[in-house]
Length: 275
Image 1: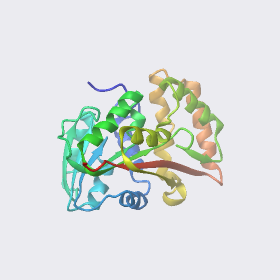
Image 2: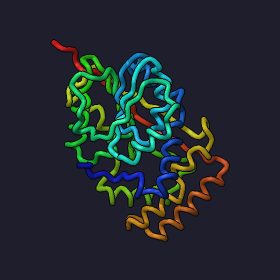
Image 3: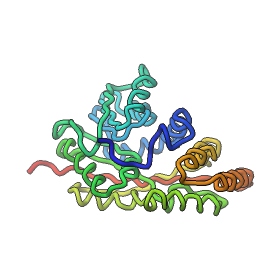
């Protein structure tokens, strides 16, 4: 059964096409910088990699270039996104890749299968803390002894940072948070989850993406007012919220100092070796 989640690529957004475009920009904020972080946490060519929550394959494509002699198993719960990734990435991947529809909390893979697992913005979409813990425990099960897991998560406090600050946007984010049942604190829970499950040699780093690197237009899909329209249909926001948001974003973009920043916390650990 598909777990309850606020995220739905087909419904909670402008359109599926627009959401895939947003995901592409989010996944490619700075591939070189993110690749360095993956290598620092232990990713090496030749490894068998489990990519958890692979979505439409936007990360899968550049991840394959890092392990041309390795393999990727791309696990995604949404069959629409699995199908999209299979079709859109045909002939584009640099390593062997298998696309699997499945739930990270109940995977069919045998124990001790993968060398490395990467879960990018996955815990945020598992609102039940018990299921989040179960997901990480399942990832540990399918990792080989000594295998590495890297979690990349955002946090409400620093997920989207703008200069100048736009108070109206913050108020709307508060409304969305209340609808979801609480603020996104997935990043600050990663260390605890890894430690609780039993990972060793846990490390925590910050990865900063910003408009000074890619330009403000690159980040526009992240704060496109059109996304508010989908939330109006769901009864989360109002038309008045939409108009307020549009005016605020226009004011932000016209500012001489307009700057956008996104931070991901990268928490990694190692599965204990067999005794």
